[in-house]
Length: 270
Image (cartoon, rainbow, N blue to C red; front, side, top):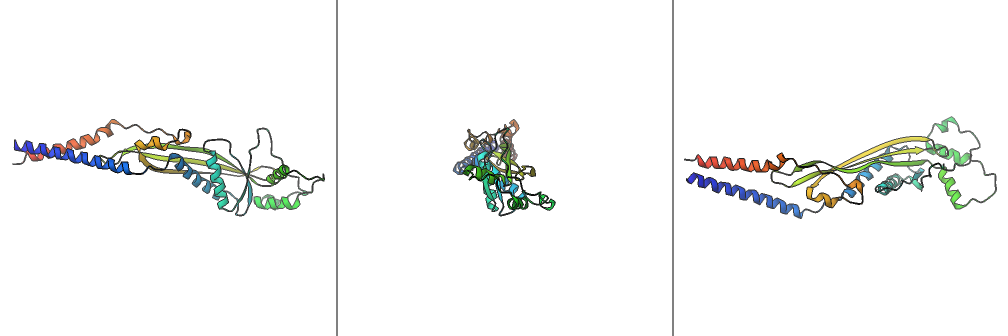
């Protein structure tokens, strides 16, 4: 009889300790500040991808290029800003140009007065640009071009960089519990893929194509997920995995096993 009473007391103590551990863990979790939003995590991933893509592009420091503006999209302004930042960090002078309307070709510059030598044609874009500027023929009509026409002509003389945001999303690949009595956490992952092509001045023939991707991951509490997503940006929303019943009953089984072992120990004592 005494052994059974002792076993019950031990079981009550273990249950109280378990509740205390769970309560302390929850109190600490409540004091933890909210992580960065999914949009901020995507911003970091896009910035890192843009820097990698610019480093791979055959554009030397001090060069001048035209950057085609991206079409409207929820994440396109972020990608456009990231590319501008990455290019200017490399001391590349950038002129933003609007994308041409369907069926409309960008105006070309005046034809050069002589054929381009093979050594220049097979060289870098900067060498071709310098040669065209030196050998451009004077206009036949003596008139003063408007500011817009002059801007288009100058843009036609520059290599054109076209950027495409191929992938930009946040997903939750894994759901797990932090410790035996810890809260439920979700692994969060931001995935970004950027591609680019570089077009030659005047002819707009593709000179270079490249691609870069970045994946950033961390973990957040499951209860925080709705607070980190942005309803106005679909790329920030993902599907949280469902918890299996085995994971739900696991802490209960462990506690029950411990209580059973303690009860057996005290019951068999002389």
